[in-house]
Length: 383
Image (tube, rainbow, N blue to C red; front, top):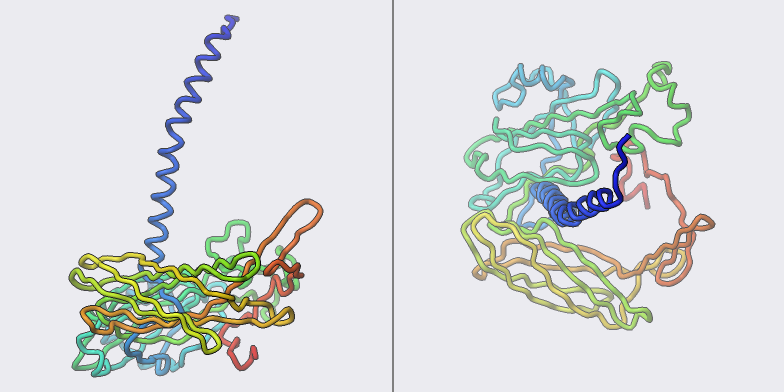
C-alpha cells in the first residue's frame, strides 16, 4: 500500500481550509438573503391586531358555510359570486368548529356593499384570526392565502371591489388532523399534539367516537374592511432599553410602511403616553412607487415606569399613538401598547434562573392555553 506523505496531507488540509474560509462569507450571504426573503414574504400580508386605519367596517356577521373539500368546492365553483348557496348554513364570526379526520375543511361566503366613505381610498380585507389554512377570493378574484392561527393578515382589495353594488367574499378553510405525529406537516402546537393529552400517542385514531381526535377550525376573530390613504403602516415595533438603575430608558420605534401609489414623501407624528405624561416626536419618510420601507425614531424616557407581573409590582404600560401624513393629508392613525422591562435568563445543568428587572422570579403558566377553542377566550371570560 502506497504511503501518503505528510506534505501531501498538509496540502490537502490547507486547500480545504482555504475553500472553507472563502465559502463561509458566501454561505452567510446566502442564509441572510434567504432569511430576508422569508421576512419579506411574511410582511407582505401581515398586520398587527392594533390596526392602522381611517375608517373600518366590520363584516363578521352574516356568513354562510358549507362543509366540502377544496377540490370539490373548486369544481362546483364555490368561489364564484353567482354560486348556488341555498343549502349553505348561516354562521357569524367569530366562530370555531371541530375538524375531524376526513372531515376537516369548510367553505364560507359573505355578501356586502362598500361604505360610501371608502370610495377613493386604499382598502384592505383584514382577518384577525383564521384557523388554519385559508384561501380568499373577492368577487371571484383570488387574492391570497395564509397559514397559521394567531397572526392576523390582510389583502389589498380596492381594485377588486364593486362600489355600486354587491360584493362577495369567499374563504376556504382547512385544518390538518394529523395522526402521523412523527411526520407532522402543520405547526398547530397544542391543538393537534400535546404532551398533556389524557391518553398516549398510539391511541390517536383508535379511540371511540366520543373521544375522537379533533382540531379547531374557523374564523375565531373578527373580519373587517379597513380604509387608509395610499400609505399604510402594517407593523410597529418598539424596543425599550432601561439602564441598570431605571433612571432612563432608550426607546427605539420602527414603522413598516407600504405605499400603494406613486412615489411620496411624508411624515409621522407620534407621542408616547403614560399616566398623563406625553413625549411627542416626528419623523419623515420617502417611499418609491409601490414601495415598502422601515423608518425609525429614537427617544429617551426619564424615570421610566417599569412593567412587572401582577404580584411583583404594577404592570405599567405605555401607549404609542401615531398618524401618517402625506402632503398634509392624514393616511391613517394607530396605537400600540408596550411595557418597559428587562427579562434575563441564566441556564446550566444545575439550574435555570429567570430575572425580571433584576429581581428573580419563578415562571408559572407554562404549557398552558386559555381554551382549546380560542373563540371562547373572550376578554370577559379571561377577566
